[in-house]
Length: 165
Image (cartoon, rainbow, N blue to C red; front, side, top):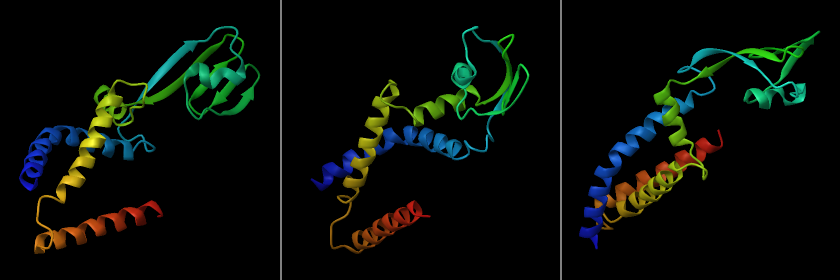
């Protein structure tokens, strides 16, 4: 059993090395998503349907966390730009990721509605196998195994502490 676990662990590790590198990069980029460090600005001018109401404006423009700052006559001001309620023209800017970073983020944040969902499930299960198979890499009772258990406990404690910080 130990030998088979080591073999599975080794070849799955080689297979997952590329996937882990991609997930690591996308995770690092996602850490900075609130700062918009990796984004560029795009100016958008859009004419909305005449039936669009002020309450529907954020949804119609596809802007998250939309909030009207002020209204001055026919002009509606919001953080990203303006909307003319008479002409139904919106002028605003959005911050977007370059295509590669956008795809990486979609990979990392895939939900059940995305085909990438299956890759994420596979990756999660493979990592769980890695965790479990690690304990078959060395015989229990050996010095390396005991030291490994201390590192495992340390990793669990660090993660739990970071959750509450």
